[in-house]
Length: 398
Image 1: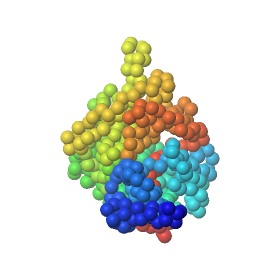
Image 2 (image 1 turned 120 degrees about the vertical axis):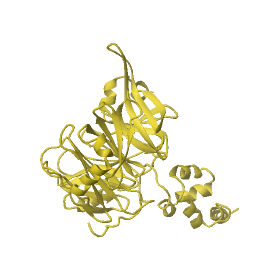
Image 3 (image 1 turned 60 degrees about the horizontal axis):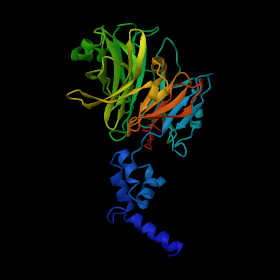
Image 4 (image 1 turned 90 degrees about the horizontal axis):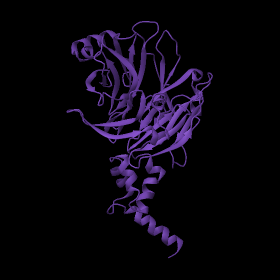
């Protein structure tokens, strides 16, 4: 068979990848299945692999974690970096984020986080005021400005966090949830922004609603401390708080900033390190330290998964020592290191080791760890990146 005949046969096989259906129909079907299944389908045959890997088709299919985005913290100039996961041939976006240089406030920008392909930046930081924001899509090189949320009162605060909510499968609009606590055990305030209305929720009406609902005030206000741990999981912000009963709780907020429920932390013996979403479920990572008298006998991580929101059924998924992850058993590694992310489709966790700034992946299935990048001390906290090729609604209004 000649080369041209071989190509014709291969193209014919691709055209009949699924029972004679044309490529477009197959891609439309595949666009509705999870990213993990897409990865497995590439192993079915060479025509399936080529169909899924085709750049014209790949953008329409569900995406998964490609790596991490981080920014330099030294000096006023913005320097971005993209860190690909092991095995990825090239970054899916411009690793320098040069398109951001067109922004007028690029010299005062800070990366806050990400959600399903969008990055959240703050700019114009002033200690007495809340920051303004920018939401960017590196895959389409678009950026939308978001005004400041304002503060209920001026001056320093105990905790101040802003979370991005974006689910392209549900809506083309993104939301921001701004959470603020002025002092120790003080009231926790919440505001929410919608890219559809382009306004922040009103403080007064928000407070009346929270008081009427009762749940948030009963569990939080006047009796809890907002921690720095939180993430967007299943379209809701999950915050870790510490209450007067000396226990950790997970508070969930929807895109309107409304308190949906309170979930108890799964392990009272573990200090919370991270929350995240993997394979459709909420996961929590905690720090465990065991001692006999003054001697450290075990230090490591516990990973829990919430199997059912309604019954709050927690299952211990994995337990690993720092000896296995870092090659040494030292509880300081847990306090000085950050759990960056839980892989959305695999049993992998990613850790930034504080002592040497190494990025480490730990596989819960094989129980193997792998250091795949050294960040350097002049870069900020890396945020996970899953590409999205959906265009921002306000692409022409930044």
